[in-house]
Image (cartoon, rainbow, N blue to C red; front, side, top):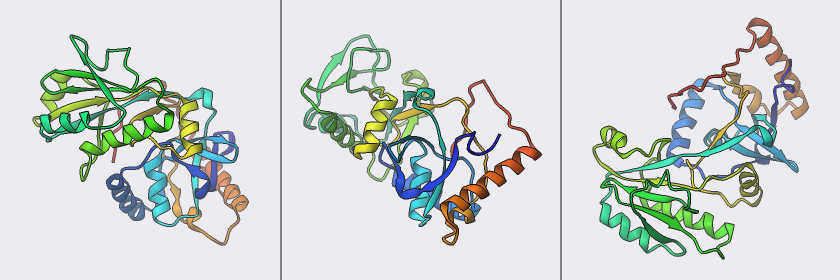
Length: 273
């Protein structure tokens, strides 16, 4: 097995397109970490579409390398059918509840419907997401049927901007208020979002209509981790792209000779940097 068979490829960083905006605080922190470590541990996951590599997961890593001036990046190219797209909830902390609610109601395009006895996460009839406040009051976020995908993306970005500012986005797969109240004394609300598809992600990447950061959660079996590629290879400006990929193939082959691949079927928890 070689790098190509694993879907590993070094590509021009300018050909890699995000489907979501990036959180500048996460990018700054990762840039400092990458500069210190000198390695790319886990390559971004991408889908190739007409010469563009649309990121499924790894926007922060890609932007960190772009900010550091790297001309190339290592990616893992996967087939669209292998990816499953889920969603994150955003945890809003330390903001006045009434102030946030007033600002949300002032947003254009969105309308709200009070939910009674059903949490936002369980309600399958919403189209644009929802909000559950720490006191248990829940509302669906709805858009008119005539709203375009571009209007939806713009509305979601305006929504997320209300509670980010200088704050880093907190994500969670859980929307259980009892559980979240135990973890966060200053919990204000939980925001949920639409479940997009891989085709949606490709459309966002190709049109550059990026959704807010920390919404989509892509799950791909066979993801390659801990490659630990020396960034000097990506930074080098004397080698051609073909030569870099040949070097990548030699590096991966040598790694596999020392230690075979280990495949884990079970889901795992990863503490993010």
